[in-house]
Image (cartoon, rainbow, N blue to C red):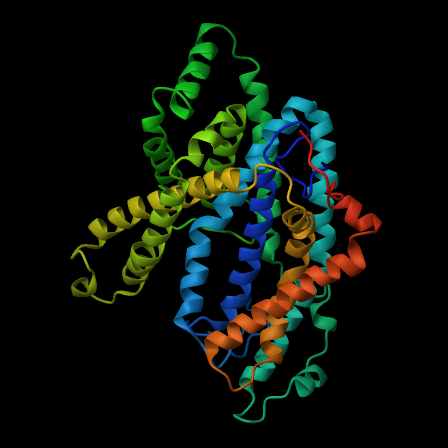
Length: 424
């Protein structure tokens, strides 16, 4: 089976198909989260006169707290999961290739799609927001997408037509490339370590991940996540959209990449995570929905000390920090175990999902903004409108892959096609 995305962890002869499929499912959650942003209850326009504000530009007139919750829970779990899976596949690249070959492979499979995708998607992304602003700022009952097209030329939004630079959703691929560079340096450093010290470190790693000390595994992972976000003074896994690497964004997410790397060195951990996987996932989800999300909102928006639940901003932040890290790791470990349990062999339906996921990731963002704009004046319940928008965006994204990309050189460059028969 050929890898479906640039970082697919499955390799011939290994039974980790579920990790490929888990990546595809996470991309669907990414799409859902990006569509629901247009229906969040937060304010829409901080500066209605600006044409270059990104991210706060369009909100549907009908909004729902469900959109807030979906987006917040996705932020807790999806990026960590995707970076962990990327780290898992990195370990297999190291086994099969030298660092020079890996550099060429990653440039071909990550860097080029990122640059080309950004040149096409980012202008469309900005233009969609500009259309949304025109629709939003129209008088009640006078919003017209046709008028917005007439009044909004696309020329100012073409690549390099202005000094606005924003990685948008391509920040993930950018930081993934940074992780590869950092990991190559780490490999070169580790290669210089020899003798009893290195062997003891390997033995300790095995004991914590799959051995007698595996009861330390979760506390260690939680502690590393808290340490990685210490500089930022928040439990949130911050993301950065600028070209200059952000240390907080790097450290907060590199922990998960390193964890995936370590897990791949001891793949028996997936069998261990299979046990009680459902319990881990449900517990992490409940923490995220019932504790992490409302506690984070309370800490961020409380105007006075009396409004803080625990009476002290410092105490609340400490509790929020800890529970956030626990929730994230419980969700991640639970999803890994469930994927290993549910997909012991190739499933053609999910194989296709994994195959299409990288294209969907690259292409979906402008569509996720534009479709809610099309439905701007549709007088239906916000929750119904949000889910209809989501389905339409997913259908268009997958249809574009199937009809325009799958059997082309672009489709092959983005990851090839799955075989339909299982391998042992």
